[in-house]
Length: 158
Image (cartoon, rainbow, N blue to C red; front, top):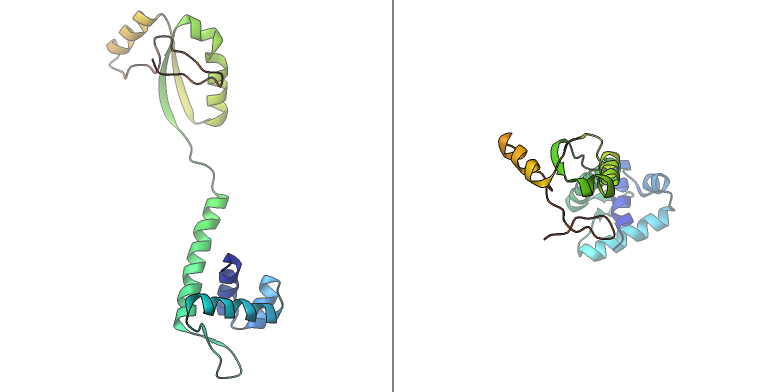
């Protein structure tokens, strides 16, 4: 079963005809009819009452079209939404060896990727950095002591 067949089903239910759906989705009426037959085979039940001149959607077809409409709305939301924003304040302590080597590029990348992030930086030696953190009753800075940094610029664990 192809995802597009469910979109076509939604269009058939919305427009009320195979011809209307064909015009809406850019297929021929016979291609729409073929997709509906494939869906009926997939679900093992009829989706349309074909006893008259027009194909009338069954309750299953209406339920599927409603579910497809909801699913398409959710999918469209993912497509159009911006990624989750990181915001707030982060307190970072940095020792002299990191201040010139890693910190400038790391801060630049962080600000580019997360413009709503407020970085409060403490530049000092390890002991004073830790003391300052304790005195201010803050969470310990992310890094007061030097840690190994890999080739990609990520801080490793010690």
